[in-house]
Length: 72
Image (cartoon, rainbow, N blue to C red; front, side, top):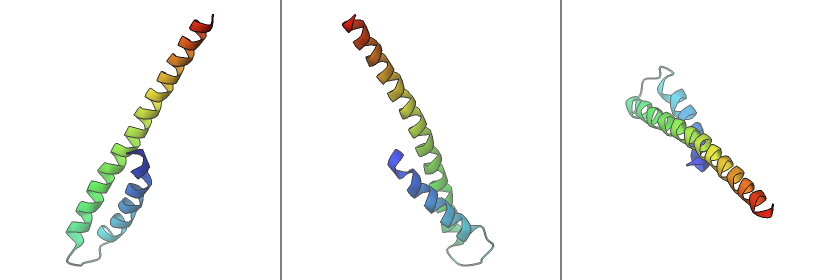
């Protein structure tokens, strides 16, 4: 999910510019929905990257502690 963060950001910005600028065209509601779903995907992707990176740091720290305990 972390690799899609930039994609969701670009889709959210483009669809927000198209959907919320006040232009009147038949697909305006669809573009707003795409913006909503892309924004949700962006938030999930950002949270996922933060949570995963935190858990990976914790796992690395634990293996480093275990290795130093084994070497002692």
